[in-house]
Length: 224
Image (cartoon, rainbow, N blue to C red; front, side, top):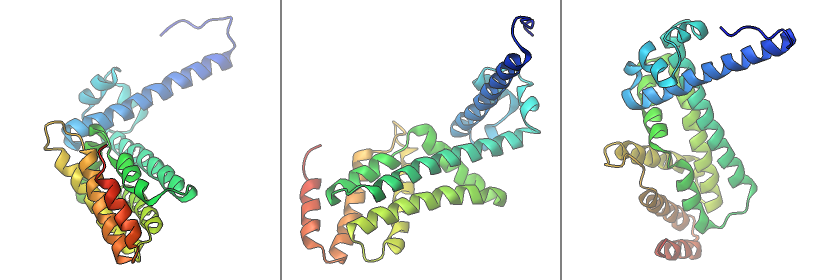
């Protein structure tokens, strides 16, 4: 441990100590999410996490009661961030007057997560399926995604946005799951956008908004 600088007041040393502790704890949580994405929940061990976080092996025991407690906290933090992103998108869709032709692209761009996020979310859903205590956190993320879908569908003039939202969520989750078997392990944003456009077209036609449907169909044929 470095020697205390007698020229600095105790409060300054305490703040530096707390800041260093927070940084190490955050590093453990981030590393755990990455390990979950690569190896699944079963791969979350003291050694795997601390090596990824580049901290001493005993660091986990300093901040958490057990490796399971760390895994639970990592899941909570990951889900909370996912909810924050989706809530921000929902707020933006609610506040702005987007043209109907913009909706599929905006939606696809927001939900086409990177590989780590996709893998971690799939693992979180599988883990929740086996551990009932974790289902609430995962359900919160899915609910946030449904809220975005309801907002977008409402803007599209869907007759039943709440009922149609589940189809959008299932579509997005399906693309995310299939992407894991792809060579790049990335969601194909263009393909996802086309699929979302198709669902929007169906909702527009069902709502009798034929001109908007024609406009969206024409926009979807334009090169990107």
